[in-house]
Image (tube, rainbow, N blue to C red):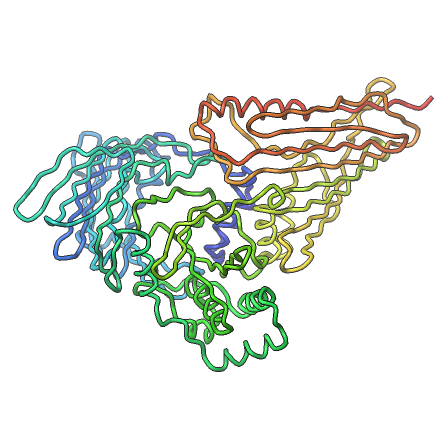
Length: 631
């Protein structure tokens, strides 16, 4: 755990790797508990939105109460902005426990820096930062600022949440829009308080609040779907070019027109492709060959300037520079396919740990990623263009089972990305145990990883050095009191969505003496960690199935025989099923187990029954095998 957190904090650690390591922490339930009690809270958060002369501005005023030293983590304020999002009128002050202003923010306190990340080459994103801190508790820090946008597709989403780890007692939003301004909106746990009609505008006031929740619970519904929020989307907008949000078809046409004319390839690149594909006639093989070419000759680097958040760089840019962001790499791959006469389409999708809900009635940018779809006669090939080591056609856990926007001229529409099936996520573990004197054991263990485990170990194999891999594997091994004697990661070929891990472990005194007999506990199947219902705060969400199998062979020590074996067990519920079978002959004991959890979302009420299933599985795993000397 400490090693993983250290990796995340490395200064040369890419943003995409940070995301992957966060997935590792979540997937293996290695995240530390939420540390933010009520050390700090927002006592007042006021926002004013205004649209005037086709420009948008917002002014935020925030008051944070710092209760103790632990709350000082929130005294460091960062205000992001960009060339399109101009920031102004920054002010701040501190009030003591009696409400008296004791310090005001000075211009010299403001620090200005680029938000360029280590996986970005160019960015138009910047940060204004400062700290307001006092030495007597409690105290209140207040700050205010204004953001102005010259172009926008939608008004910035508003939420009373300043930080997931701290509560907001009171939040108010006032939205002033010109008369005749046509829009759609979506509210979640936000209350419309008042509407006031003025000479040239209509002002609407909303209020909300937020009670801190533990966002680190395993398999929780995404925070983005749980937090209070308000979204306002105008029917007509100007962002690069004019567009409409009346339906997804109109929005898709705007995206196509914004990115039109960017599929040019240099003649040298066309010659390379022609030579590469000489003699290949099968369509699927051509697509795979071009995908491998793209993987081998480009790399992911974020390029976010101008309207880079939505508009791609030309295919020629990627061909010449050998890098690009997800839009540029996907556009480049699309151009390669187009050059050889293969049609493909952009698919906009929200890439995340858990699927986040799409507001289907509000056509506006709700997506943070783009992939390609190559329709076939019987199936669709989905192409991820930012992962240099990912298997061809693989649908990753961060995009599977999502609602996405299929971009097609005059026919853009929401679609469903296929969900991973049991075979796609299986974790198959095989263990051979050989006992030796005096009760020690050596175990040969093999893991076959698919699904999110494949993604994690594929990243580990591709992007980390041997020393980092060794430390991670030692933290991953799900046993106590062992010696790691050897390990090896194996990937059969680049298009196999499976990584194998082989281990040799030594276990001291695993065979315990009981009178004239000996006993040992069987290895437990991976079940995850879930808190009792009284401690659970969030609904449970399995976006894909969980399917783990164990096959363990224990070699019976010379001079011993089996006295007793645990009974076979089977547990079947609406949440999943578990089964274990144990048998033996004169030489070996064979233990076979399966655990499957079905994909679904369960309320807190249903979680009680789920936890009962989980508890029964944990109890069933407490198995003991007893050996006795041969007579």
